[in-house]
Image (cartoon, rainbow over all chains, first blue to last red; front, side, top):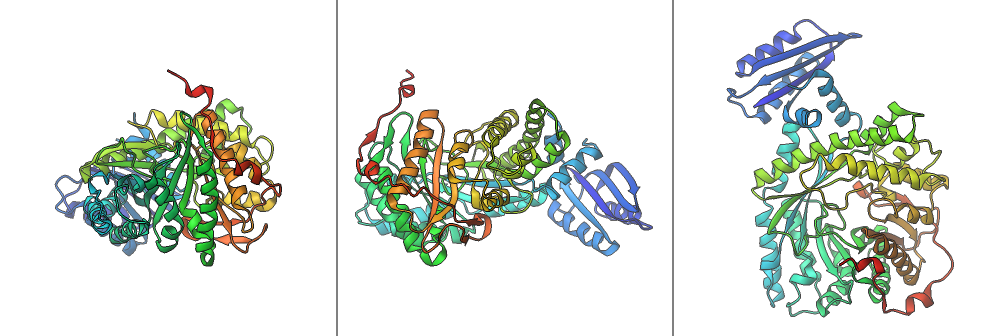
Length: 89
Length: 452
């Protein structure tokens, strides 16, 4: 199953490192990354495959929500299909 | 793979502009529950509802979390109770409403619809018993919704039923006078009622439906309003195109949720109701869309045309995004549930008569309108008759959900709470329709009903 991870918050050192480490620890494979900083606000969108993850999506969402809170950014994980259905026919 | 631009557009719709799936409604047939013994009948329906819908709320919450789209309501509709309770040996059907209410509490759903009767051609003794039970049923239960269909294009308007419903609305208001007549907010009088409507208070599970079905109502007035900000001053062709594109996107989300819900619950996927349903939240208003088209205040000249365009474009955009379309499908204009409509009434630009005109070109009818407590049963019946006539002649669904609030007069404010919102009490014509309503009988089906 593919998921979309969005991270928004104040820029600081190590956001990408912390998030990608946590994804690796949970066997989530990153397929695509897009990241930029606009007026000091960090924006990142990742598409990843969670097929090999032992955690169900709900638990993954909770884990990353907590991680986000610990580094001062908002991390959201959603099933990819909501974006596909809206923008692809 | 979705592009970052698309991902942020979707997130913006959800987080900033209130995109949501308004309701997942499980329609449950109660036809297997009939029993002459009222107690057994009540037990049968309680068990049937609680067993069939036991995972509804949990599945709804799972889908909401996984896809990150809010699903505001999880609800249940059942076969019209007048039909399934026909054989019960009893004078009152209030215990049935109480059993439905218990089931709704047990399941954690906020409304259950189907305390209903279809009487466009007089109705049976069972129908009359149900209608008589409505005021007390709505006063003693919290989550049960009632509806009565008094007219169809094929049958015409049953004016005896219309007269009766004027009295029932008044009685319901009296019995819930201590709660600003909240009972009336759970009572809809229909013309051309549909059998697969997922929206309350008028939802019921039609007799032609299967055992169990999932119907979904989408929403997103805030998203449409925001999209229209990008075409300010442009011709109406551009306005219509923008609404269509937005409605398509909104409906695709509804379709995804409907498909997932039906699959996980193991029931038939039903219809998507292509609706634009407001909530009292700022930025979730249909009136604001109309004003975005260039109207100073909703209700001013041009409002009906603006609403006609909106209603049509929502359907055209949504149609291609849904596998099966049904329900009420169109823009809703419930006054108390729409911040822009409330403001327009308070400003004096929106009147009951203008709302009536607007109902000719949009979904449903005079919805969630507080009127003075001294409005007579005959006047309410005459308003119902007018709405029914619009529905019957134009071959569309119309409805009336008026709340005559005891002790309140024009300009007072009524608080229903939650999604039902709040409303300023609106003026009703002071001229009487009593002699007209006293006639009774039937207004015949129009010539357009003879289509064979």
